[in-house]
Image 1 (cartoon, rainbow over the protein chains, first blue to last red):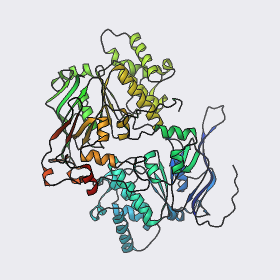
Image 2: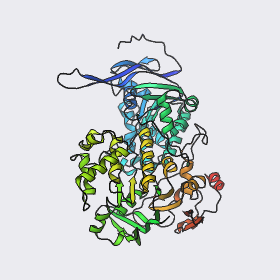
Image 3: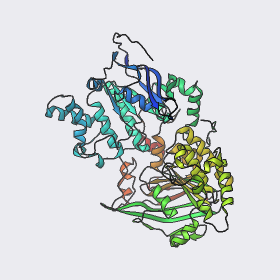
Image 4: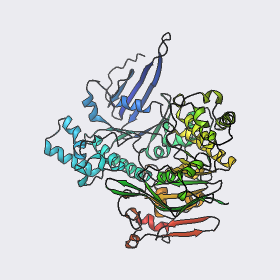
Length: 281
Length: 334
């Protein structure tokens, strides 16, 4: 696929734009067969407007995490482009990229270095980017940890001394310390207990209001998505099958796959029973 | 309906480096014949340890005690290991959370499906195979004949869980313990599997203890619910009653903090339960929820009693001193 993209003037309202993004993995078959292709992400074009929360929903294997990795510059797309603030991302400039876009991953147990203290983990991005001296960095780390609700005594603790919710707060602090515009939240609460999930969702809402952040919120939990997002993109087998505002998507889903996803979400309603779905899913 | 399982004062302690972990702290509950009882609670509340204790599959270092665990009149607590082995797989069986790891990769599905049934005297290979084919068919697996010769790695997660369910039904048990059987699955597959479990359970009249942390699942599948917190059962009730009138502050908090369409305003702050679950290492006394409860006062340092309410046919119990405080007071305090 060859898509020519001329440099564009910066658009104020678009924070992140994906232009015909694809990731194709070669599949080895037999000795005498032509190698096949797995289209993990297939020609996805999306825009994230500044200050909005865009939900990305779909089942495991639909390509949503591959998409997130490409946005973060952790994986090179097979074709297509990512534009941040109207500028094309240069793959050799990961650092400049990281100033604008940061991730929060699903598993707070594996995404924090077990040998570093909370303060070191959160301060590392500042160090890597050569921002400030040690004292200034320290001050910033303390400020951001305070913002995400981590008490002073936890700053010298190691991740294994923290609860799941606290670890996710540390991951959020680390993502925010470079003051990015965009956060990619990849299932940020699915490893947490229900009562803690609400705390983290509230924190994400507060931080968004405080810093004017733009979120791409990846989740399979439709209840959480409906609560948090402005628009929803539904992904199936590598493609976006439906993109609509929250109100429209949840009240009047168009694509059969979206309808099936909505039907299979089990809201707490005793008496409704378990929906019958077509077994061919 | 008659009582199939009656658990009284079940305790499970696990020695750890930092002291004794009181994973299950004296729980009572009953399962009636043919009913679906949901054990619901967050990670670390003791629900999985409870199920392992019932099956007799606790880790070796765990210390388990109970006044009694009556299974159809026989006390599991005083039974020999040999006697319990006679029950496992035949009269009570278990479905685990991880369909990836709970099947043996070195044996064919047919081999594993038939294993428990062939332990019974007088069962021929042909009969066991016949039963396996029937159940694979009933659990929605196509090409059952071919599947018997396949190995677990040849199946998707959803299919493996269907095989696990078929396996648990092989000897027509009276009780199945299902420990988070759909947590590892996608939502569309989850709905299909839950529906299948519910249908088979009602058709075969099997009692099921269904363990989950997902209140959405609970509301759709349960007959009765036992809510666990910090190693204790804090509330038991019929499912409709629990969701309409939750009594324990923890249950109320849990129901309030999940966003629900039409009830929670999108983008608004959720009513989170503050704080975290207390550590169960060392001595634990008083109400375990008091540190997170908006109604708690100094009286809650005493162990709260289980308070009975509801009708004799449909009892509603909760372990709390503050049950008379109206729900509105809690929300104002929050």
